[in-house]
Image (tube, rainbow, N blue to C red; front, top):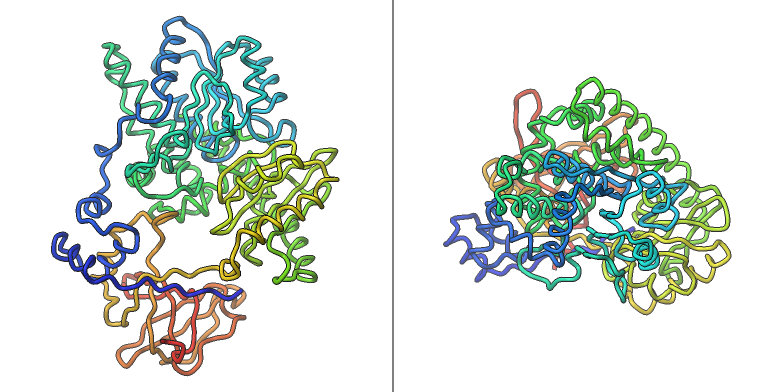
Amino acid sequence: MKYRWELAPAQPLLANRLERELGVSPLLAQCLVNRGLDDPAPAASFLRPRLKHLADPDRIPNLSRAVERLWRAHDAGEPLVIFGDYDADGVTATALLLQVMRPLGWTVDPYLPHRLDEGYGLTRDAVANCLQRFPVRLVLAVDCGSTAVETIAWLNEQGVDVIVLDHHQVTDPPPAALALVNPQLGPEGPDGSRELCSAGLAFKLAHGLVRRGRAQNREAAERFDLKPLLDLVALGTIADLVPLTGENRMLVTAGLERLNGRARPGVRALAEVAAVKGDIRPWEVGFQLAPRLNAAGRLEDATEALDLLMAEDATRAEGLAHALDARNAERQNLERGIADEVIGALRARFNPAHDFAIVEGQLLWHVGVVGIVASRVLQEFYRPTLILGGDGHEWRGSGRSIEGFDLAAALRECDDLLLRHGGHAMAAGLTVRPENVPALRTRLNELARRTLRPDQLRPALRLDAMVNLDELTEASLAELDRLQPFGQGNPVIQVVVPGLSHRRPPQRVGRGQQHAKFWVGDGGTAVEVVWWGGSDKPWPEGRFDLAVVPQMNEFRGHRRTQLRLLDWRPAAAVS
């Protein structure tokens, strides 16, 4: 799979203004412009994210109505249930709301559906089971419900009020919830509130509840501090891969500080089993903590993950963390087996000129890992991908998409073939009868063929600037760190370093010799380059350009510039 190098055009007029007014380097100014921050005021706010700049929670559509109904339940002693989702976003949002509402006097219980027995979202079976266990007249659905038209209509018939707190795309017509709290219903704005995930929305709802309580002179609300809950917001937001811009950036920046304080016993225990020794950053959340939180819900139900986040005792937290670690190892084995099977079969018959989308399913593929498998398949073939599994007359699946193809919208075009579906542009879930899978594959390919241009079928490698080695100093890299936290919507800095050559013989390194290490130069001193997984790929020869992530490497007390290789090309390719 060959990358499309996309070097951002230099914009000296815009960058020079940022240099003058913010006192930043040309490279940082260019990186800000590349991220749409060409005006000094929003650029300055981006570099200094503060919670005080969060927007009024009542700007979220229908949030004030939800706050009113919840306080009415509080004052009447009316119990409610939080119906959560089983992924990290849903679990952290559920935990956050429990840790706000219980201390403030609500009678509230959580219900997390069983992935295999009840499926994704606010399904009729799951809700019936929930109400049998908790016979309430008020349900707060978290991280689900925006497409549950039939289930919410049935709940209304039973006299049950439903509040939906969700960020996924909404059906047309929307479900008839008492309050559909979903930023997708509001206008796009500079605060980025439409990009909030459910953990962020839970924080906004909690803010709204506490603020209303303070306005009514309720003593418990006056005393309540929301800031210790920001660690949960950071976990859920990073795990759910929403853009780390706008309000998400403010929440995650503050939340990472809380995570690194490790005040929550569950976070301490989870970091220990995941062998996170240093700072917890987005990478550690996304690749070490979140997979373990997700593991329980992927295989059965997410109760252990919720219990871990709610645990107040270190010993109990340690036991739960080890259980999640074991489930994660089980999940990895399942995922690896299915991914190897799918990728092996596709390699034998994949036709890049004909196959614009991939739809694969098999009886007994574990539905808890099909989303991760879809991501692995997409990385290999770079096509919108649906992976399906099941054990009966209905198969459930997950999809991942590429830039330029809205997967949730495409599934709406396949509505007649599906039993249920929902999600957003880049990831979605669905339920389908196995006999409809061939027709779904054909339809999705037709939609992708009409939508995607040939150049969109190669992954883009977006590069911020072309720089010389002597520009990548410790001081310049420290300045670029002001753009952290990196993530969706604010990608890590990637640059082109042109006209290089080897200064020492390349080496294979790492366990199993699967990585490569080079020392390169452009006439000055040599700089170390690491290429993870690059030992079996063609290595640069002669004079070449490198696309890299510049970083500082610390080893035995010494710090030095290191380049993480993304791709290379012959130097003659420079235009």
